[in-house]
Image 1 (cartoon, one colour):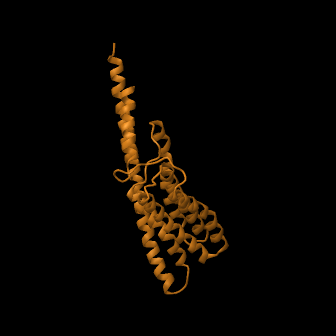
Image 2 (tube, helix red, strand yellow):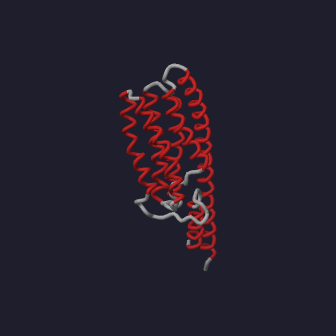
Image 3 (cartoon, rainbow, N blue to C red):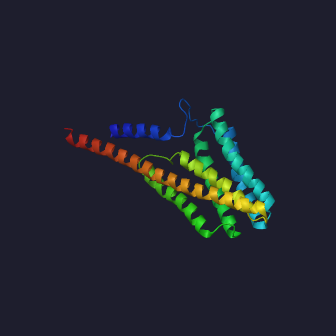
Length: 224
């Protein structure tokens, strides 16, 4: 049993180190600059929902642009200021996914994007939610965000303002539509690539934990 716990602890350290620069510590601090930015991005979610429902597209575009910029900024500041925290590692992707969900629903409600896009993107997030009980059963928390996942999120967050801008008549709307859908397809592809990576990561962690438990069980049975 002790050996299994040691193996699991080592695996958790390796697992948690993903996405953190070498020599960089993950703190338990709550009040940090990146966390405040992520919280403000969360507060912008209902603001955007109201704006998109009311048809205030200009202000909705502004909110989307600010959200996309803040998503980039909090990550940069976390590394530059050495303020990477456990709360931030959960808060940042949670804010991203909530903003993506609400934005997609708002754009679908306005018939800016088709319903299948909502299903495809939300389906990937539901897949990750389904992995959480399995990870928790083996002593792991949520998986850290991969590069593909972050890139896919960036692409989608930049696609949405362009798709909303595509509703404008004239050449500007045409250019925005082409660019916006390009970002959308790249975003969806990277989003699901990250989903596949998360499934493989989960499988590797579960197999490792099972192997450690099996070795411990064999040792226990052989003990006098």
